[in-house]
Amino acid sequence: MADWTSTQVIVFFAPLVLVLIGFLVWFMMRRSIRTRFQMEKQLHDDPDIIEWLVVFGWSRKIIYLPVVILSLVFFVMSLLIDQPSGAMGAIWLGVFLINFMVEEYDAGIKEMLLVVLALGGIVLWLSYLDWLDDFWGFLGSISADMNGVAYLLFALIFLVAIAVSWIRGLFHYVAFTPNYINIQRGPTESGQQIGREELTTVVDTEDLLERMLGFGRIIISFRDARMKDIRLLVWGIGRKSRTLENIRGAIVVERHRTDPV
Image (tube, rainbow, N blue to C red; front, top):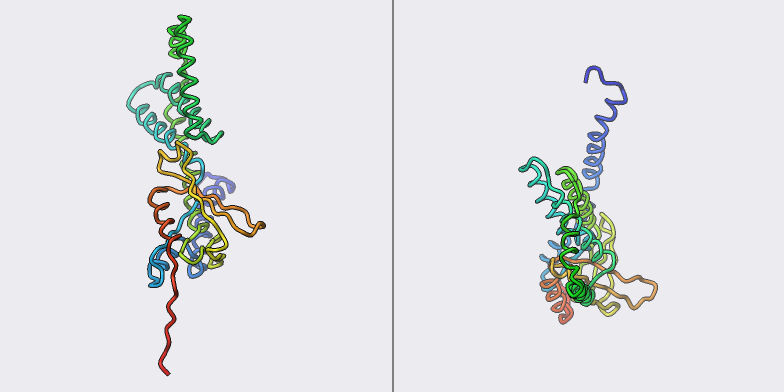
């Protein structure tokens, strides 16, 4: 560091300064910051509320979880072998393309069944024309050379997007209770409460890959046409949909304590 220029010193200390500024902002606002965990604790401690649910929306990039897992596996394999094979890159590319098509076109069960039937028809057609062996040979010749760092980089890109959605969900969430929902859109106590009679909720689990990964969508529609629908990609949709059904069927009468005169 002795022969560093002033620019290098500034670049070196810039991240530390940003971390310090972030810590100071958190320290000054720590009493007003309200995360979804605090909301869950508040609802849990409320004696008038038995059924409640706090949810937030994950990033759609969670669909790429198979690619992330495969990338990490191939990264570890690349550390154990001298030279990653092109077949590994071809397999990774195939899984990525399938994930991309599912994410891009919102493919559900019907679409996936149509694709499977179409592929089966293509295989039968190639087999009838005696082209099937040539086709498999062509697929086997596809090679995509990637080193281990590339696999790790792709995994980190998707993991960062997923982590950002989780951090955002600390301050942007929806709390369901039998009488109202609380919509939170910021780190402070400000929020919007809407009565249960002013909205409807729908659970959507038509996306095949989302459901296989344990995800589904909770859609909130409002009677007020000026308010846009809220669509949340939620993990653990099976358990949370059952909780939401219990909330729909419950009405809470608040207790009012009367002090003796």
